[in-house]
Structure formats: structure tokens, C-alpha cells
Image (cartoon, rainbow over all chains, first blue to last red; front, side, top):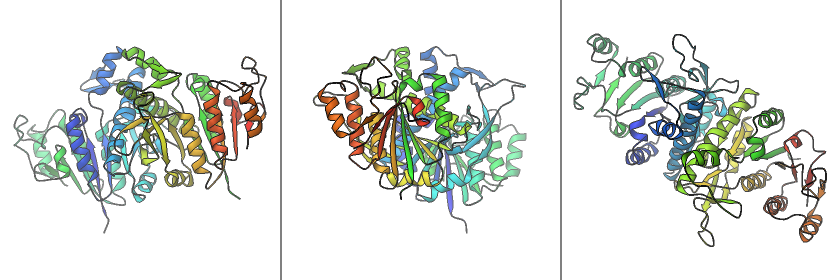
Length: 258
Length: 258
């Protein structure tokens, strides 16, 4: 039987709230089996851009990454947020290592085509360096990834953190029984977006298609759900969507399986 | 016989000059034996502080690291500069990994006492995690360190890059025949500070004391030379001081031995 691994992705709601982040880090550090953390960026990059007079340009909710914007996200994601998380985990006796995709060539990506929309220095994941990530895990080292990848030719690229999490989960499922956990601002996939108690607890492929048809899952949730089922269709055993407490208690969350 | 390792430290004159940095990276990538890079910060952190309206306060040439200043140096050193160097090395087929001292607990430091001068969030190196650095090297991974350490209790600390380089060199000398190379703006230790051709090519302990007595070595060079002889007195075989071309050609530089 394969041993268990948890791939956990946290978003801005945790990163932007010092108390929530502290609680999360303490909970995450306590996970006894192998684990990997992927973090998004939160609002700090936008705030830094504002202070520097750099425009944050969005297209349908997605950031257009100009050269100056790329420098900002490298500083904030790979620098400030990543190292704060790593040092805090070290303080909780979790031997973390902070990584961008360039480090030890962990995540290679291709710059996205400029058609139909030029998103700038944005990359789509091409390959995960499973053997090096595995080496860290075998040595008891916990990888903490920011959402920066590279093209292998010297160019850093801004990359979607949800996608990085699902691609890492898929890659690790060769060797591990893999659980992918998305922590975000809501308690799960909701029947009624305004009622945090209306969690749909179990979602399989059939239920997912039904929820899509009824437009209960739409807008921002659609790409997240696509990532989830992409992972499930590629050997990831289980996907959990919930708030930051799910890594301790999976009673109040959505559990996705095939 | 122990196999050879080169520990190379680069300063602001290389980091702040895109052409010099590109040339250096190409030369460094070509070193065939195990190698470690340590980089300082250059002027980018000061420039970012200026743009953000954060004061850069110095005391006798050394930065006082306020909390805001620490955030800036983490963003610039561990983020922008470190990841730019790592991705550029990856582009030259050198499998680099960027590290702060918090990552995999590589460098622990103690916050410096506030007496006689309160330098703020500055740390003095306490221990180097030789076994993890060795693990990377055995796997053909080249560590690239920025000058940020941690205290093991969740606090990141700004640390002198020259000292990190000498402490890493000392630590690696248990397993390797270790050469420590300081690349800076001049061609070596100069007899006449205004004449870049007046390189003192060979310096041993006796010569060093003589140069100190004659005040040929003074001011900024003194702490650098103290680091060098500290390393030599702790099993490092050779220290080289020169400009960025020394990693290819050690004819025009100063070579320090006991």
C-alpha cells in the first residue's frame, strides 16, 4: 500500500490575516505524514504595486503580468511570503524548504501564448520534478512552493497556484496515496453562495456535472473545480475544499472523488 | 584526498550590473567541481526603500535593520536577486537551488545584542547545516545563498554575506578541500587603494600582520580580511580576493594562505 501524502494549497484569505496564518502554520506543522504546501499571493503584491505606482491590470479576474509586475510578485511571493512561512514552520519544528519552480528545477512552465489575450510573463505548467521533490520528502524536508515557475532558459514566470497544487498532486500520486486540499475563504462548495452552512459535502463526477448544468458552480469556482477533477482523473485519491480548519477536521468541507 | 569545492561570494558591483552578472553566471555555471554561491544585496534594496519612503540608516557603514527594512531585504535578497540568479543558472544548465538560512534550516543565527549599538533585526551566524548542504551537493544541486538567516524560532534575520561565505566554507572543509573566493569591485588587496594594478598577490599570516601594522589594510578591508583569516585558521585551504574574473583566471588577484 502506498503511504499517504497531503498537498495543501492556501490562498489570500489566510496569507493576508496574521492570526489565520499563524493558526494554519501550527496546524500544518502537526501533520505527521509527508506534506507539501503551496501558497498564493494575497493582497500584499497589489499593495506593493500601489505604493510603487505600478498598475495592477486584470482581465476577467486574472492578473496581466508586466515585467515590473513580475518583479513585484517575485519579491512578494518567493521572498516575503515564502520566507515568512518557512521560518514560522521552522519555529514549529517542521523542517520546511521554500521553493520557486526555478529552484532545483522543480517546476518548468511555458510562457502562455499572447493570443487571444496577452497575459504577459505568465507560465503554464509543463513538468514537475518529481524525483527532487521526493528526495526532500525522504529526508524529512517539507517543500513550500510559491506560485513562481521558470521556463528553463532563464525566465521566471507567474503561475496559477491552484494549478501548481493540482500538478504537484498528480506528480506525487505515482508514489503516494495523494490527498489534495484547497483552503479558501468559504467552508466548501456551497449550494447557496451566500450561506456558508449550505456546504455540498460529497461531490463525484456525476454530481459535478449536475451542479455545472444547474449553474450552482460557476464563475470563480469553475476553474478551481476543473483543477480538482483534472487531479482526480490523474490518480489523485481525494480532493478536499474548505476553509483553513479542514487540515484538522474534515467534517465541515466538500470532499470530491471520481 | 578530499575533493575540491569552491565557495564563491559576489557583492553589489556584480549584482547591480546586468552585464557583469550575466558574465559571472556563465563563468560560475562552467565550474565542474562542487560549488556554492553566496550573494550580497547591492543597491536594489536601498532603491526600493527610497521608493517606499523607508529610511536606510547606517552606522559606520553597516545597515541598521528596522522591521520594515527587514521586509525590504527579504523581498530583494531572498526574492528578486536570488530567484533571478537561480533561473539564470538553470538557463546555463547549472541545477541551482536558492536558499535563505531558514530553508531546510541551513543557517541559524542569533539576534545581535542591542549593546553597544542596536542594529535591529541582524543576526550573527550560530550554525551551518552541513549535512543538508552536502545532500544537495551529492545530488548535483548547487546551493545559492542570500544573506538572510533565521533564529530557529520563526524570526528571519539580516546577516553579513561575507561572514556567511566564510562560515559555510569552514563547515564544508570537514568533507572537502575548500577554496573561498570573494569577488568584489577591485582586482585584489591593493598596495595603493587608487591603483588597481598594485595587487598584493600573496598574503600569508605574517604579511597580513605587517600590512595591518602599516595601515595598508584598513577600514572596509579589515572585516573582510578578518573573515578570510578566520576561514584559513579553520581548515579552509585557500582564500582568493579579486574581481569577478577570478573564478576563471587566478593570475590577477590576491591569494591568501596561512
